[in-house]
Length: 493
Image 1 (tube, rainbow, N blue to C red):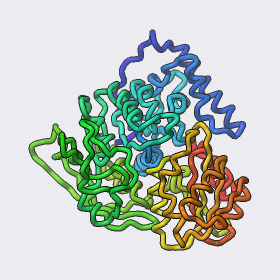
Image 2: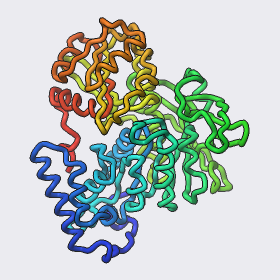
Image 3: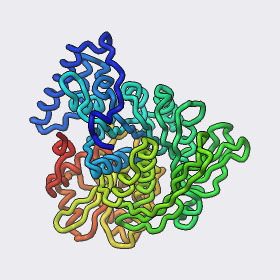
Image 4: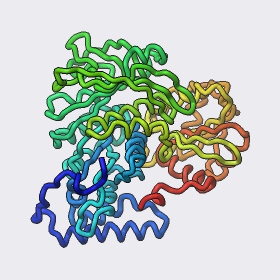
């Protein structure tokens, strides 16, 4: 797994009728110049450079990714963190992969990363790439980059005004999968929707999940908890569950047609310790799962420490391990690196200001929000809770989902000593928290982010911020500047 051209996958010849060499050079030049200009102006330069490149060659991404070994990560929650885990593993192994760490995960943003990192003739400078891809953009991206592996983390209801119901999101991903039949799918076996992507496609499939023996011992999940997939995707009958992990994830089975959770290649067999600073788990690797399993069955167990807390980061971790396994990359690189994983931009990201610890946890839909609220309510220490809610295009204009999330977990938590609210829809969030049981005098609305930073850290208690996407970006810029953390693009080469 060394980053040398000698070991690189032999690329297919460039179609010179489709990709005129002069237009390719103009695409790369336009991309680089646009990005450089934007960064001089202290802007990230994530999507406009891609648009500039595509003016000259609309499929320049096909040229700039040719011959690379690529893992694509998509799904509703966990994309950025899973990509961070994959990228960190390669870096610890001495390889710097190409990656869209900005989170610009549409076609234009991904095109910008690949094109800016190629030679003037469009030849890739790197062998490996870790790509976060929006669910709706998958069908445009993967036919051009032909990834080795597509990871699908999970599927939940998200941004209703953009995606509609979750079945529409599932079909958008399916369209992308069908365009790359040779790509290995790495699927969450515990998600009935994600797992269904393997139906009627020729792609090799690698499954990962959490076993009931682990979940039943450590997790206490209400069967009535929010579920976006109560009914069988095959026949419409309500699922029976042997166990839940959270939301609709778990050991599902249809009592009528038999559609059920697949046996994972990689499974968590024990949740040994789940704390505020990380988790200890035991996993089992098996080659006996799937239709192409060898006659000689083998199974290997391994204990792992994950340097990030919460159940959803356990899922992110095994998704990352599964991706490495599915790609045929060295297992040791990913399993040894998880203990040292750091939070990614706005996702469980930690700061210290005025000698106060601050943790920023991006939330954007009911399922993910519930997991974050459960994390806060499990801390057993006094803290300050901060809720930031915007309704800009990148967030989804429909913010009704806040009524489906269980804000009662924090609103009525005696350890939540102070509650601050901010964002363009702070009023709506304030009302939601009042209905959840928070005393009105306990809820403080602050519109200015600099003032919010000072107020929320004035109590000398740990601060936990739950923002949605654009509110995270604006508050993170203020907190990052005050604590000396760089913007994502300042670390890019």
